[in-house]
Length: 385
Ligand code: NAP
Image 1 (spheres, rainbow, N blue to C red):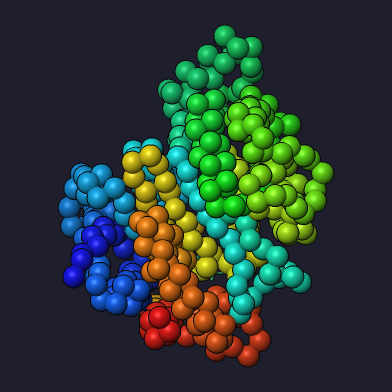
Image 2 (image 1 turned 180 degrees about the vertical axis):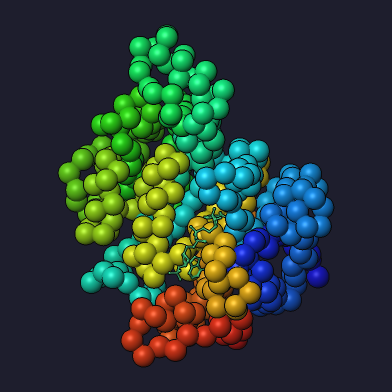
């Protein structure tokens, strides 16, 4: 029997609940898809609170080495304190492995609750540049010598007046970062027959970061020649299969567009912060963060993780929805070339939700549906594989 080695990080908060409910589902999906000719061998890697307790480090070197060696991992959410404390381990992992593409598909399927009248029109992939923008973490606290030096530099050299009681941050967006990201996404769109890409930016205000992102994205798209069609009016794209329709929207408008006319949008190409915000907003169109998977992809390594965080108030309660994690695993199987597992797993999840079996987050949005526990949902998916 062939072993498929997969490193995993269970994660903080609700991460353990989700992992317990998902582990056997994933094992069974591989066995079923390949008639027991393949099986998963898990390798646990530590990060976050569990790592701190066991090793004294939030992100031990063995975890970095393990991901580097196996070139992929699946991870649960990791907690980051707000307004102080340590910097995000999630962001650090994306930067250390140069995982510059964050991919977050948002697709409606039958049975999911939605605030929209026609949710079946939602089939959008958010691509978020994953290494630049304010997520570089270049910022200084108000009152520190670093903030003071920066404020003085702005005052003396750049003719910008800021009072000394400002906290300050830098928002870097590079040409090379935008070009490689845009190329990756256009290649993806062509290979996967997605036919529209919309650049989402706030270039009217942040001209040399978000505005430049838009400009460099268009320049990159022009390099694809006849494969790209440029047009701006909002219309449902009807194009030959091998062409990609390319346009852009200002970010605030985009938040309205995805609610009022989701059928006009296919792929959203976003700088880091816009993509982060839009991911949760779009997840709300199909029931919320409980069903929002994701992947962080670089040229060498990929890490698959749900869009949501550690939702600490539900930790240990066996309540949370494991679907985002399961769907992230499905993306991982596809990435590994194990498409059969991915198809089987997604079908079983869809059948379970269609049968009205759902955790609290979806059940509370559906009249007359009694929620099942996180572990029960896992068992129900496993039964349907
Ligand atoms: P969150 O953990 O994503 O949770 C926000 C809310 O979303 C939850 O209270 C819950 O809504 C809903 N939710 C999230 N995951 C769900 C699931 N699996 N099933 C059902 N509902 C789910 O966001 P947060 O509270 O802002 O952040 C908590 C911590 O997670 C922070 O430390 C943050 O830094 C971290 N975080 C980590 C990652 C990551 O690891 N990649 C990503 C985002 C945030 P209701 O309360 O309405 O039930």
